[in-house]
Image 1 (cartoon, rainbow, N blue to C red):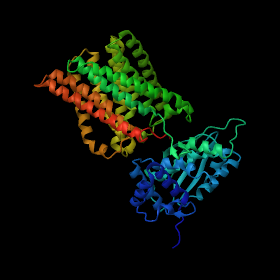
Image 2 (cartoon, rainbow, N blue to C red):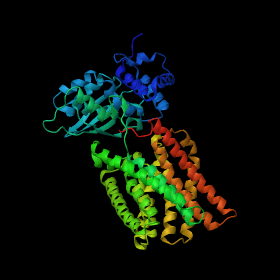
Image 3 (tube, one colour):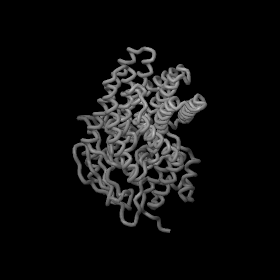
Image 4 (cartoon, helix red, strand yellow):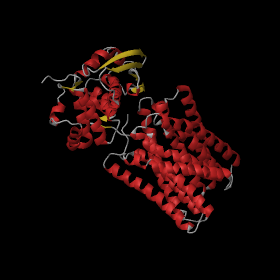
Length: 532
C-alpha cells in the first residue's frame, strides 16, 4: 500500500519520545491505543517514514489526554531539537544571516516535513519576523497543530546557538481566520559571538525548548502563578486571624500559617528573581506576558498580607512593611494597566487572573490601611479596587460568556471570580469599622452568587488534572470563608460557634488537601511548571 506523505516521521518520533520521557513506555502504549494506532511503538520512531495528518492530530490528542496537558503540541515543538539534534536541521549553523535568513526560507524548510499546509514569511526585521501558516483545503485545523508550529518556531534561533524565540499567535485558523499568523522575536547575536558546533547547538536547543538535553526532560522553573501558594496560605491565615478576632478560634494558628506562608514566599521570591534575568526578554517579557503577567502582582500582594499579620505583634514594623508593599502594588497595577492599554489585549487571552493587580491589590491595600489606622488611604484604595473591579470584571465576564472556553490549564482561575465580592465586603467592613448597611448586604448577595457559580463549576474542575494552577482556588475560597464568618457572628444563629468551626475547618481541610497534592506532585517531580 502506498504510504501517505502528509506528516514527516520526525514529528511522530518527537511526540512518542516526549511521551516516553514524561510517562515511560506504558504511557506511549496508552497514547497509541487511544489514538487508534496499531503498529508497534518502534514504527513511530522511524524519522524516514511518513504519516497522515489525521494520525498526527489523533496522537497529539491522545498524548494530551494521557499526560493531562492540553499544551502538549507546544511542548513537543519546543523539545524537538533535543530529540532530533543530529538531523539535517543542524545545517542551519552553516547558514549566513542567522534566524532571519532561515525564516525567509521557511516555505522550503516546512515543505520537507509537512505537505498539508503552506508557510510563508510576511515580514522580517531586526530580531523579529511574521510568519503565516495556512492549512490546505480538506484538512480540519487543530489547536495541537497550531501549538506545535508555535513550538517549532521557538527553535529557530537554537540552530544558531541563540536563546529562545518568543512567539505570539494572535490570528488562528482554528478560530475561523483564513490562516494562522505568528510573530517571532529573538535576541540578536552579539558581535564576534559564534556558536561552537555540537556543544552550543545542544545548549541553545535545550535553553530554547525548555529541555535539559542530558535527560530529554523539559526544564522547569518558578513562574509567577506559583506565588498563589503563599497567597492561599496567607488567605487561610487571614481566615483564622479573623476567627480569633471574633473569639471563635485561637490566634496562634494564624501566626503559624503566616510564618509558613512567609517561608514559601521568600523561597519562591529568591528563585524567581534569580531566574527571570536569564529568560528571554527578562522582566519586560514577564510583566507583559498575556497569561502569567498579572500573577507577578502576587509578589507585593502577599507582602501586604504578611505585613498585616505582623501588625498584630510589631505594629510599627508591620505598618512600614505594609506601606512599602502597598506602594509597590499600586505602582505595579498602574504600570500593568497602562501596558494593557498601550499594547492592546486579545479578548480571548483574558482570564480572571487579570483582577489581581488592581482589584485584589486595591482591596487588600484598603483592608491593611484601615487596620494600620490610615482612614484616608484606606478609602482611596477601596475606591481603586472597587472601580477596577467593575471595569475589569465586566470585560472578563464578557470574554467568559461570549468567547470559547478557557484552556484547561487556565480553568482553575475561574475560582478567582469568587474573591472580589468577598474582598470588597471585608474591605468595606474594615473602612467603615464594621458597619452593616445596604452596601454590606449587597456585597454579601453577590458573594453568595459567586459561591453558587463555583458549585456549578465543580463538574468542570473535576475533569482537570492537578497542577500548580490549582492553588488559584485557595485564596478566593478563604476570602469567602472569612466573609462568611462575619455573617455568622452578625446573624448569631443558634449554634453559631459550631457553624463558625464548620467554615474554619472546611477551608482548612481544603487548603491542606492542596498542600498534600502539592507534596505528592513534588515527590514525583511533576509540580513545577515547564518553562515555555
